[in-house]
Length: 423
Image (cartoon, rainbow, N blue to C red; front, top):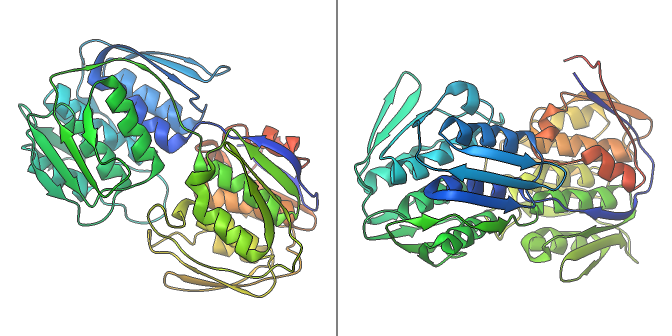
């Protein structure tokens, strides 16, 4: 099993190109099932989760060709030959549940194993299921599988009890081929949802309200296969900005979308970093005043993203003064705290609140990733630590960061990926 060995202390400098967004690519791959013909997706990141989702659509009858050098994925769909997604494909990635919308819309049935994914707390899919029931589907749970049936989904009005990115995407994909008008209330506003909506509109869907909490869909008889470019990954973009910040370096991210990380950019500026932005780039460098701690509360977009909470905490461990994080999205997203403490971080947690007292320097240790974003936090901490840190279970980072080692090396980091690590 591979490990990272990172010797901290290097001040990162240079440019980091941002890959396509994992959280946008996954629903786009699934949405390709809604139309016959060949869909071509460009700027698709070569990640473990993407490869898993490709296997999912192949299981349902799609033929695929993924050029990982060019980041181009071709998906050819005729008739769907299967409506069941087995546990072996779903267990590592809960986004597999996205297939319910397209399967119900095109085939009238979906048998999907209850999903797995990162161990960051309960993420129930009851909102997905209630939404499909409101659109006329019948839902049963048998032997660990969700069994959904609908001769044809019908329009209606559904209010999500909580803002849910996954449910918004899933119900949106079901609604585009439903009979009549569907009104979805309390929708997620994340850029990933807007990207999915734009893709569906290009395919021929009729959608209003993307980027707002109320989306209106007029069902159409059929959609057409198209070519579409996946948006930049805002979480990767934020992670490399934080890498520059924690090493007090000068880093520029390119091929990015600055508006998608506005909450992070504002917070870094308030802490004392010098931030500049352009149409598709953001740079960070030490500012002309002393750094200070920060207070963040994770919120749905456009608030501070929960996926950047862990990497932000790593920065806070090195910022003078007291910082506070309130995690409002997931109830078990402080799994990185124990590992950061092993590196000398002064962090106190109580429920969903973390209080961080900044240290002059972290120290190296042998540490272990518990999930994707916690893993990013540990990489950042290692970049700033004194000595060489060994990070295990790095397969978590392979789920969401394309060419992590190469990009950090390009910025001057001392990082090696080696085989032979222990669990």
